[in-house]
Image: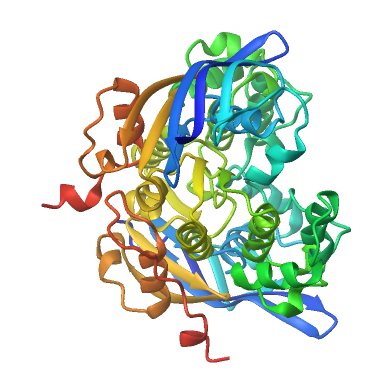
Length: 279
Length: 250
């Protein structure tokens, strides 16, 4: 592991205005990330996706984000100009979104979209671009990439669309990949393939990965370290292998609420939401 | 007598055949799962039973009565469906009260007021939600309303199309518990579509595995404990779901 971490985040706060004043959806989040795989888990509204967006400075107004420190590979992200930030997005840090149906451009061929991601960040001859796109499509295990390049997003399946998106995000060779629910729109069988693929690419290229998901078991399977978020705060931070021994009542409640393959309980335990929130 | 009986059921959308030769017998009081990937035809079977996919051939029998191809009022009182997305399946401009009273009004049933209150209590919703609109409710609360709506006519057979896949795990646990409780209390029969195998293990007695419009295997839910499936497709689906981690440790 390199001496300086890939990403340092201290006291990140994201807030939105409401008629009753500003509401913080992320309340003082801190972590450091090396070239490792970090999982962020939480339920809807826990602030996990907002954390991912804030790292790319993509929280839209009227939302606002502040942090005491947000340093990526020695670059202070908060002091970058919007132009510099745009150069960094995609090239150094990129993000895989949830649903390929809404995140791919419906009127551009797959080949053109992936090429665009590359052209934005690197100057290459047309032949080289084509070669890189083909190579990338092969890397995400698309058979017959020559044919797929000419297709439009509606002509491919969900799993294939998600692989196209992964190809698009990885082609500029970023150092950090943020995957926000990358497989929740996919079937179980395809889910495993896509995650194995992300996992393999992240390991091969020595990237950092932040996997954001609501699925505890999935995150435990694919990450080294896990942060559990609830109502904008980290309630538990542990190694993925130790998740089953989690101590916080919220984490324990979440774990218990998941049905098992060999289910013997007559009733699933549900969360008593008053137990830890203190409100 | 079986609650749901499908014989040689073929279902088409236009010229495409999406389900071919489905044969299922679900006993009264049983909870039966249909599992498979998207596009395998599992939801289509539910739709055909409910009358939403009218282009079918074969035989559909529910509680001993054959289903025709037309809208069937009496059928609605025996069999109802709950849909996947509680955000999409409730009318945005109707209050909970209007949604729940509508089936009673259509069928000309009395005591609407009392029945609505009774049903709200049965699905664990407070009385204060009665005059709210769907956008004022959370996902879990909406799914409770959708279940209440389906139960208003006191059907004996419920068709459940991925009732919890749009919900958080903790809310999923609440809804699954509710469905289990209702089945026990009212002696319901469930035919449930899902792609989540652990949910099958919790909720169901038996399951049919579908692939590309065909049923490839019918197995007891206990097969999920050790993965004792005979069909290679089922085995791969089981492996993709992570198998049974509780057994691997031992």
